[in-house]
Length: 603
Ligand code: ADP
Ligand code: ADP
Ligand code: SF4
Image (tube, rainbow, N blue to C red; front, side):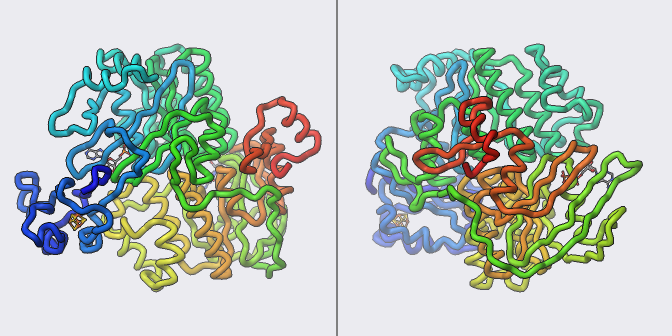
């Protein structure tokens, strides 16, 4: 086959006990007696028939693709690599396995970002930079060893770094992507976890600025996702190492906490001259956080390319436009666009519910919430914004009638389909069985086009809920919420653990669902871009988290964004080229001007 093609077999999917090797039977070279698709021999799991192997020498390439069509389990990919990709890979896990092209280049004193989908090789790259994985330059049969790797990087910005890795001189601190799993590997309370990490003498300040104080004595088992995220960030930044890697810092944090985390990471790089690498899918925060950016593209699970560094502005703009300038590479057919003069035209819609002024407090008034009476319309996507712990979920419970208000004559018994912030579905049940137990529509052409496709569920239908990654679980939970029949659909932080592409797809799916099903959807989220893409109107919560919350009426996007961002004292300007909203530097001329005009977002 052409030199620039690869064959990738996903061994988790290849199940020859459940097919009759149709790939092998139909492969044209095989049919003429060549050994293109063969059996792997000794690599088969015990008691299982042998899995397949594809010869990249003999295979005819993507234009044939017969085996890809024939495999009932989507286990095979035959891919023509883009011609622009002339180099050898940095690493290939084996024959017919994932290959990675390019590496990010961490720099002392800088925060380097990576922007791209999940499954594209970001963790592989970090394991190489941490010295845990010796790259084989694609020669998996005869690994070349570090000296040759160093030779391959001579004269590049990575030369010195790779020399240090080879010599075992690199120490690394790492924040994992899925903080929800930390309790499985640590027994004890927050103080015990953090004390072990205090290598720079910076822990007290980190604890204070990330507001971890109130949970210092709490068992790690009892922390919420947002608390775990802040503890994990503190535990990573407190270490004294050469290289820091943070895989997604924003899930479960509100905007104020996101901005604080971004500032702490920047200070570590700038003031301590450290190399920091971050993967982040909240673009407003990535923009604030990183000095330079590598875009990652390719075919998740098959191959990934990490570009040379770009400026953060250009990197994000090119990523959104779907076209990488220097690489001369289209990564997506259509651009992702933001509305500059947003307020979507408001359709005059019927009222779903009108609720009066409400108040609710817990216990002896440790927390109290005041809600100004308002209306939720049929057929709208109502965005809900505000810090964590301010009463957003409490308000939702008042709407269901599950919780009675202290004051306010609310006769509310809305039937709500609810996706909680922390998705806990992890039974031993297949995704398809789980979803078909929720809706009769499962598998209908409507459901497939409007729910399964945009949420990329097809490839995970046969997997067990308990084996899903955080992003996969999120997509299943969104689908489950929208598949139920209800008066109101409430999604709490649907963006968590989704990559940018998936956020945009999910936003589209939710909007179309509201429009086509005449459904009313309320979305709580802290990703400003996601909110911009999603919401028709906005409901703003403010006050003092865990003490007192106040909710205003749902309002137009412009007014809602202005009120919300004024509380946070954050303004956005528009990127000249793409109209993408970007956070202004505090006290910059634009920041001051916009604040004085009261235009925080759609300036
Ligand atoms: P990301 O961090 O971008 O989500 P990873 O680097 O974790 O991506 O994985 C990229 C691809 O490499 C995935 O398809 C994964 O299945 C594959 N992969 C990871 N580790 C191995 C391994 N040890 N052997 C074979 N394939 C692997
Ligand atoms: P949000 O959804 O905005 O994060 P919540 O409505 O969940 O906020 O919670 C607001 C505050 O009320 C928090 O301080 C939370 O700890 C407290 N709270 C929530 N539910 C209860 C309850 N059942 N009993 C006592 N306090 C509660
Ligand atoms: Fe055989 Fe390659 Fe065609 Fe698959 S794509 S059937 S391996 S020639």
